[in-house]
Length: 150
Image (tube, rainbow, N blue to C red; front, side, top):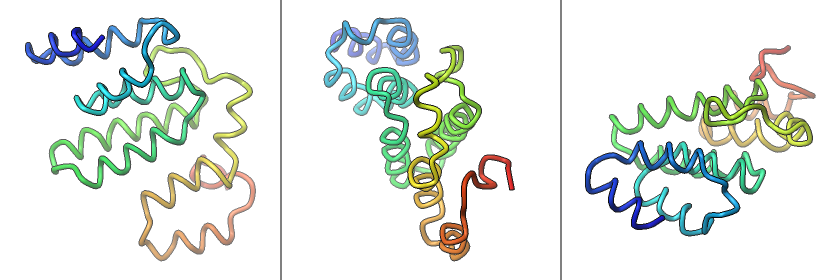
C-alpha cells in the first residue's frame, strides 16, 4: 500500500489512492499503515471512511479533522471545512461516508444522535469560544436544533 501511495503521490494523483481504498476490503489492509499514509498525504475522506467502516468510530475522525482545520492555511481550510460539512450532513441523515457507500448501520445511528456524544463534539469543537454554546449545552434536551428539530 505504501508503494501505491508513493507512486500516485509522485504523479500528483492522490485522489486515485482514495478511490482505490474506498473499493478495497478494509480487513485486508494494514489499518495502521493506511491511516498513517492518509494523515501524511491529507487523504481525509479516506481517513474518515477507514475510521467509520473499520472501527465504527464516527467521532474520532471529526475530532482529528477539527485539529487539522485549525492548523490549515486558508485555501486548504475551506476545502477541508466543506468536506467536514458533507461528512456531518451524511451522519445526520444516516448515510455512510464517502458518498455512495450506503447507510450507517442501524446499531450506530442512535449513537450519532446522543446528546452526550456526537453533536456535542461538533458544537464544542466548532464553537469552542462562542458564548451561546454554553447556554445551548445547558438547555439541550433530546435532539437539538442542529438536527433540524426543535
